[in-house]
Image (cartoon, rainbow, N blue to C red; front, top):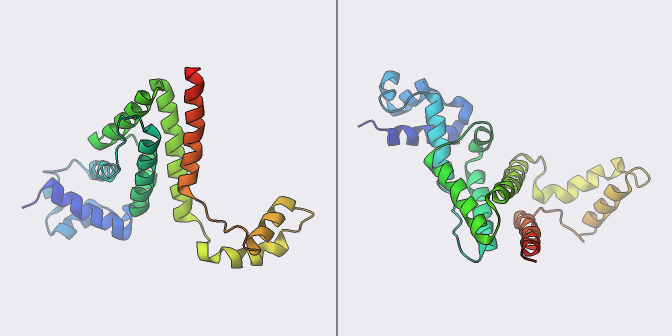
Length: 211
């Protein structure tokens, strides 16, 4: 029997397999072997489906809890969000380009604000901090998904590009390339270390508030 849950399952399969741009009411109806008009008994339109799909993605992110170890809670939140968005890569751009007011998104924001507020930040400060975190999470994830060089090809790519980086014109890049080629640095970007850097700065800010 057709239901909103069945429609969402079929829609999720389409976007994960073919991308969000291939989602249509007609394709969805064909996937479910029903007439397109019957879908409107359960959902408003395609935009409604996208909103529900995005809220489902956000529901998979670990929510931070209010406790003394707020840094650990925010780290768990960040790592979970990064992993969920990697697994649902289609969701990032629509998530960033529309107002999301589903219950999972509202709960995600509310619990994050509450965690930071419990730690000692004012709510306006907590709101700004969430912007720092989410800008980093979204940006890092998008770069990881779109970066044109695979990690295992860093060395060979660096070797190929070295002639275009003469030391006299680009001294810092040339030196970094040499460090890579000498295996003194692997060039890999570490998601967690970036979050820890943010947390360290916030911890210092919080201590200054208490002084």
